[in-house]
Length: 607
Image (cartoon, rainbow, N blue to C red; front, side, top):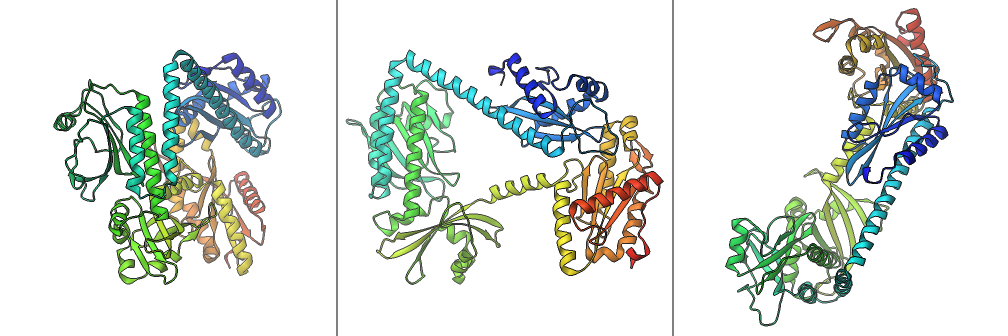
């Protein structure tokens, strides 16, 4: 971001944004140094400077700038009607500048309120403004970066006609290779002209395509190109010993003057190789083949564009292999097809359309789905796949035995014997699913206490309302607010305030009847939902909640007594909407706070 940063320009944009949204904001760099001055209503800025602790903004900056997942973070302040937000701006995957913002919420009418001049903003408008700021900033950054890249590329093109010529030649070579994706030839024959194109373009002694065998220690030579008057360094084509030149998941580029390991240098000397580039051909995130370029006759120093070209050629071969796997249009013997399909990184299953019999299952399928293959229940398993709307014949499958998720694709093909068949390819997406679940959990969970958040509370409460109406039963919610929580933060420090909230959350979550139904609404406010099967124990649950606060909390190496104000609402008797129920319980809680008495269950409630 710093490469394109214009302080005056950003200050004007910031002031316009704050005027438009009624927010207050300033910008800091990746080290926390301020880049712009406060923007927003001038009188409001002065009030916020006097009232808010600068430490709150610093801690917010640290969180959003160090977070690997969140670009926008919103936290409460010491005032109920003021919220703070951090919006990070990334460049090349790294957090750079961070907007620190402050919103005065107009829809908060009760609590510890800060009087700020100027027009306020409601909570929905606040979050919409944050999303707008993040999107606009990322768009501006992407545009600036792209302009710089285009300008640099143009400058390089003007300075080097030779590079332009190489680019045209590379484009012609890539176009020629891509044409072979539509070839009806077998995989090895389709690769032959591709390797020849690579060899001519790079002007090298030889190009080889090796297939990794199941034992991991040997390879087969699938296809090769050798320049005229050059003798191939491979004395046979099958079951070759795997060398240090064809290992790993990254490109190996060794020029004649490159310092390399003894293993790599020994492999080169053994085969009289002066320079080499080896690129893995990936399938399902695993190397199944290696595309290797050798120079045997002269010293050679590789250029980066040559390595990139070879990487693009490997992607063409990778696409060719995947197309052959999915369409099963490989020609030749069944054994050659099996050799290739048994070494791809996905499961392959072929079923005859006419008789429904299994025509082929590769090694990975037979290993992962061994029980289904043995019992003949593979069809039953595939029928459980859930159809996806993204594309026809695309499905998602969960395998109970291994607890793994798979993307399942189905295509109609002509099998080797001429009969029509269904080809199923299954790709393991378990890691992707776990990541999605983690993101979903973070979206529903309060980061400090580990409790469910407000959004999750409103969702669960809506479900509970539907249930009590459907079953003609009753439920309730408890609204809890700590008394004098601000005093804890002011006297002991925010870190001990956070610790108090964490201890409280742990205690309340263990109360029988509230397990899995406790939520942090924000600040020091909590909600618990009492479902119909626990409603008869409502009075006991209330006593258990009060009992939590009869025991002191251990803070700063000392016991600390903390009290709570409680409010409750029975639904659907007292209210039958999410907003109405929460508001009713909130009002009861504030009545409790004013009278310094906890809300108790009535005789009718306990019946």
